[in-house]
Image (cartoon, rainbow, N blue to C red; front, side):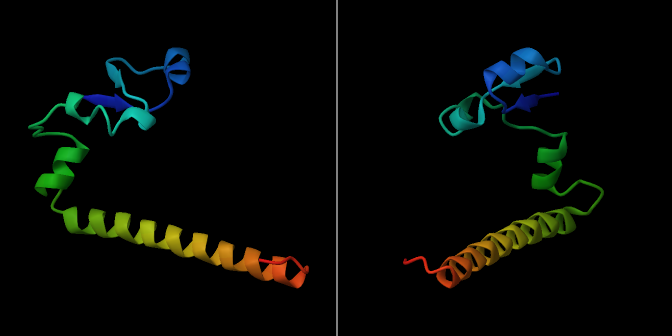
Length: 92
C-alpha cells in the first residue's frame, strides 16, 4: 500500500499515519517521478482502471460536477463583490 501525505513537513511531524510518504503539495509537480507506478489496487488505481465496483463513470462525473460547482460559486462571489463595490462607489 502506498499512502501519500501532501501536508507541510511541520504538520507531518506532529501527526502522521505510518507508513506514509511525505511530498508537500507545493513540491508534488517536481517530485512526481518519486511516486510508484503500476498500481493494481487502491482508489487511484480503481479510478483509472474502472474496477471501483463498476462505478468509475459515476465517480468521475461527481468529481467533475463538484469542480464545476466550485467554479460557478467562485464566479458568483466575484460578480457579487464587483457589484457591491460598484454600489459603494469604488472605481475599477
